[in-house]
Image 1 (cartoon, one colour):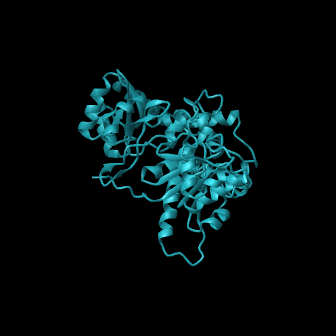
Image 2 (cartoon, one colour):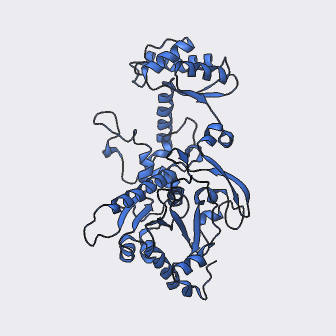
Image 3 (tube, one colour):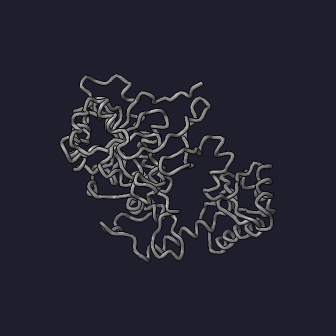
Length: 418
């Protein structure tokens, strides 16, 4: 029995480079869409980041499996003709170009709508299409810096802000939002649209994505001690003294939370995550530790003596947990319904029975590279994992076939597309 693919028959054009847009397009491919990666003659810039072959390395492979690749030089008339033919056949168009470049390449909303009024248009920008920074060039690190995300994990001793784990949080979150935007546009297209309705345009920004992952922190109540806007000079940035203050505040908050943190056991590390009183009481029972503040561990200490006592709780937890191996504590936690688990390296996921059982790791034979294990589809459809992942395309691998399909083969004469 074949696995149903909800987006089969839909065509997605992926003009985006680097991370966010390609990630969104890959997720659409996982659901059955035909994704055509439209690249400049030199290819997506991500192909050239730590390449294993002339066609790319693991960074490119991780975001571009299951796609086709065509080359269109949008700086030429021939390339733009090819692009327009592709857009006429498309259901979704994704790009991450600055506004001026998008207009010159015919990829702004108005240009796409003029060619294909039914297309869903998705744009990923650094800072959004309005405001003083709308045309500012930006990548994940810049968006994390602008949003405050770089300081969310500041620690005493940090000389400069750092990206937590080196993870492109803004990029990947923007990719998920763009994936959602494409689906929203497709659903909206199914509804009755007024006569002459143009393409559906949905924008996502790295700045918004970086704020989205801080949604719980991004709430400021009047009188809660937040910074008064009048204290923030226009264009000012965090300085060294402020970094020290923020790091101290993060450390103090972490110091007072014994129930949601990692601990060292005798042979490794465990993560403990108790978010309600019942779970906290069970942990106290297992560890033999009494905590009179368990009902509200996030409350600010009433005075310095209380702060010292509460700060010492995590040390008492750590002392007890360090006496037994990880397996002992995990067994006890599972027995009582306490959320906890061992801390693994990412390489463990490739061997994990749980990960493999859900189709989250797949193996492909990538031409020029060999056997590659990578992230599988994130979706299960009708209780079944999505079909086996396809390879990432060689640069321009499908150009000639697509030109022929679109009746545009004549425009490639004298033009190097492959």
